Length: 319
Image 1: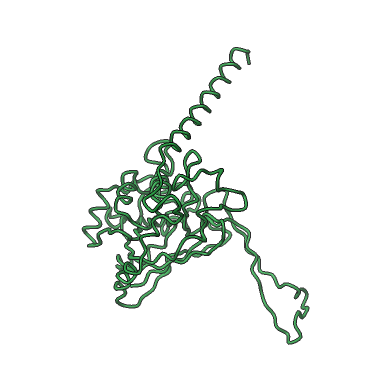
Image 2: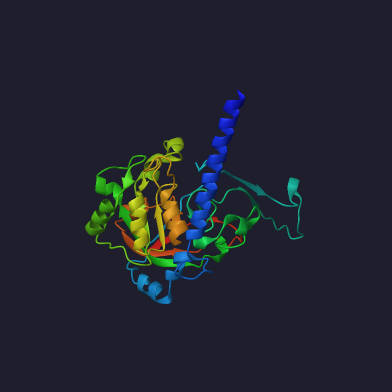
């Protein structure tokens, strides 16, 4: 490479880096504390109140319950490079040894893996842009390799709310929506009207696209690399509705490939970063739509692992 080309290439990288720093600086300067205050670490969970819980509990009519989490194992496809490995061990009981005088035996679990596998909650410390996270927190100020010092999963209170599932696959008359297909605001409003399930402040809103039921077992590679999802306008629409959480039966809620080339996971940025609205991924929504349970009592308690930014979950729908 000639000296001239090397100088030009170096100048290009300097310009690129400078633009990135400027964008990050401008975003940090423009960031303003959220409506719940500069010290808030739980975002939309502030909307869960004794009054809202009592009101949502009135949706229990039959006493039926459903798992909204899927079963996972070492073969469950996941957003790379995530994986998991499970081992069952019998400490001090190898080769038939008796660890206790009365013959008591026990098995223990050893888990090695990532929390972001299968049905999961994305916490407020999970997503940022240009190193700025929810409520103007800057990555270097709270993120360490041994855990975040703010907005950890252990801070998330029980999320108990009215839940609704919008059957987008049925609306389109298909078994499942295609990869990259958008859930638009117009479609959401049409389904809400058809089902009679208006979106209210404090709701948990789930979307059924049919993607996981149709693709996870039959084509796991495609399932985990592409997906239908909410449009950028829909993410903003849901934020304006002041919901607690948004989820889907897809691994990332957002469309892949994205609506706008290069603008990957735009819904994550809108909902998590800018509005503190939690994301619920790979939800088992099929059991609800098959039972015509479009409105239900949603209950979720997350594992309180200090400093984590995601959690494996199994929310329960009661109706």
